[in-house]
Length: 304
Image (cartoon, rainbow, N blue to C red; front, side, top):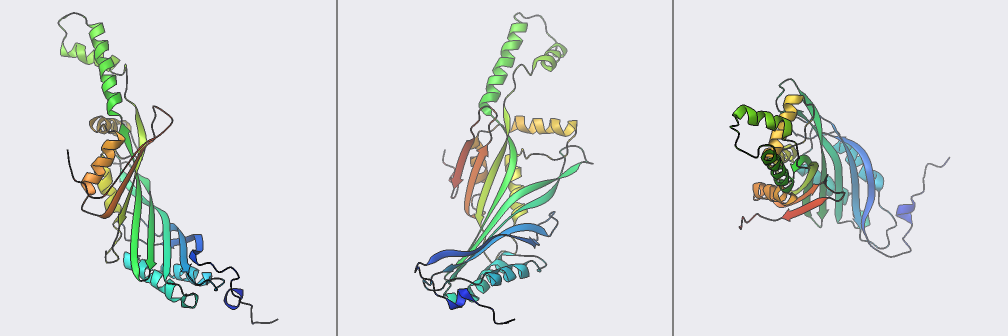
């Protein structure tokens, strides 16, 4: 048997002379360690690895080389931004015979973080946060963009106002005259009738995208997620008992928000702390079958 295996990609020229923007592989399963607090590793990531093919005669790239470099990344104790730049530089260097001057890696994964209950000290649970990292190197210029998704609960301010009006109308209907009501009487009526109408709430989600410099010591993903949850104040919960559910109801009542409110809160709080900040908010409405959405980008000016 011959040991000299044919290499069509190297020995044959392309008959259709068209440059290609990206060539490579997608959906590569790989374990990667990240230095993110409270997130155990390694993390299962799904990777895309590609290089450009500007030569119109080269038939194909060396995909096995890209795979090997990704596999070597999985052996690191912890990946930081500069490692992605180094990976892209090696990808370009390994394809000099293809005249490659650009490389791209996209990593999709979820950070799994343990979150405590609001009131029950013995309760905690795991919560997943979808993340995407996209690193691009083109003619020596490097960019790294991170996107994180956070779920929260939103209660409609208009629906809350309409519900309060109906409850007030119900009280006036039951007590048309001044009958010397006591605090206990009012409290009893409220316990029995305060849900004559209730505002609609829904699970909601926000996706935050930022630029990360290759000089950063870490990706700072959990720090970003923590800030978003603090700003919105109504993150979805994991394990709950009745005390935790009541505390969650209180948070929702104290943080009524339209989709516009949520987007403005986040953009205002994070503006100036991150490069090229972009916010996209989606409320999966329970009132109707379509969603409410809002987007914002750039520095928050705070103009009334």
